[in-house]
Length: 275
Image (cartoon, rainbow, N blue to C red; front, side, top):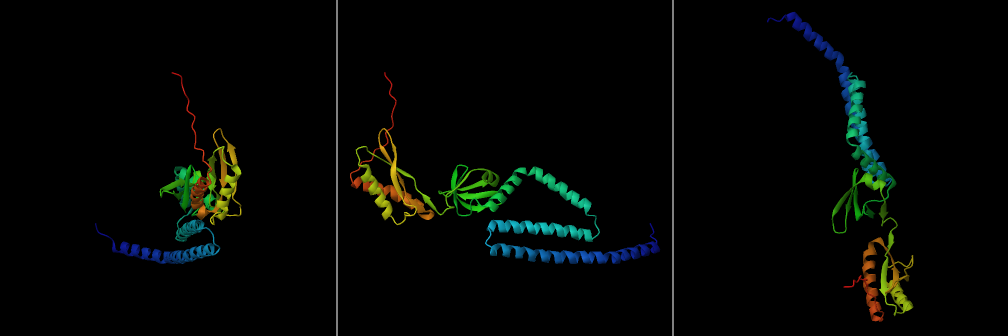
């Protein structure tokens, strides 16, 4: 097949003219793209710096900056293709349909995402707090967008979905900075109650790790069939709680033994049957 030289020449001239006519749009679109990317980077850094300077939560700072970054990038991309002359209405409709489909398929993840936002905003706990949730007592290691990472006392890692945490009961043992240890000692009915209370209270007052404000307390908790139960209530800072708990148990046991105050062992009633 023979090609007409005039046809090829005309086609080439028309193509060159179209490129020349379209080049201003192309150049301006790429200028907007490069300037926009640079501006987005500066804005993102500025937002992070401002939020960190105001001592906002690190997780909230990271999450907000990431959302802002991707939101500005999507807006820049739509502006870029619009500047190229591409119709954006159909493109936006496609994005909306894709977003709806993804949202329906990720309902559980979105609820966890919303739960993470609630935790970050209202702060029922923070990194390093000892909490009890969903039957687990552990220290908060990291608040992620979808889950919260906890580490138990025996160094096990527990991940709890944020939707469950945000809608469930959370006990925060660290929020107020100090805690009370609740101990119970069972002594014999033959023992001198006042003497036992004075001995225990003196030990609590002399222990430097036991807080004196609020004051420690010792009182009769219950009178059972076999023993007098004394409630021992020392207060301690969070970091001293475990030591105070164990020291109180050991020191009170030794002091009461030295004073001749007998402990009443637990008596379990066994049912008997006639043969």
